[in-house]
Length: 312
Image (cartoon, rainbow, N blue to C red; front, side, top):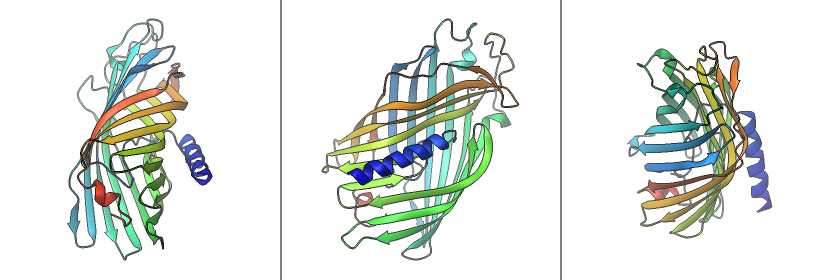
């Protein structure tokens, strides 16, 4: 277990260094669910606000065309804030709720049994949606990377990926290097080290599994409509970032339908309003002392194939 702890701590450091990425959900994992819905009730409170979140994903069945595999996923995240009376002065509905509506297309082309070329295109809308959509509400992320698969002699495999990613950092698009490691060590143990997904998973049996994970929850949302926050009417964007670590328990009611219970503790957080020049105008107290407690449901009809000792 010592080596797993080292891997996890290194991953958490990577998350801290790149914590402004406009990416959420199951982006590059070993066991992508075809559907999930997560709910974080308003049990997380800072000195300035209460926070709750709804998150869902729907993946279509994979499309295979020769050596090419295509994966389509649609997602929605809703972030809700309930501010305390003295945190923003005059109340503003423009800051109460933010939406991240996203789509991702993953294309994987297998060059051989060991090598593949992969691309991910992820357009998204992130806004409070107080007014009609504008170009400021729309963004796009993209990954291009090569992946090498190494089969283990005793069963299982490692996948090593390297390339570049075009990601929105702090509201500013940037091109940065991309690396990840994914591994199925045996029928019970697997791990992923990368951004935004990092975890160590223990499949106890067909009914129960536990993940120790690092979680990135962030958005950089356009503000439409008057903000009316004290004297900050020129606020252009809300930026919210939480890096947390914790554990997730999954119980599979049937081979395809499961429920989850997740508890994570924030290790780094930020919530601020910025102007059009990306200068901070107001910094909220986002020091969460309580853990994030989430519940959810998931559906994965190909779970057995994904958990096998051969790459899916």
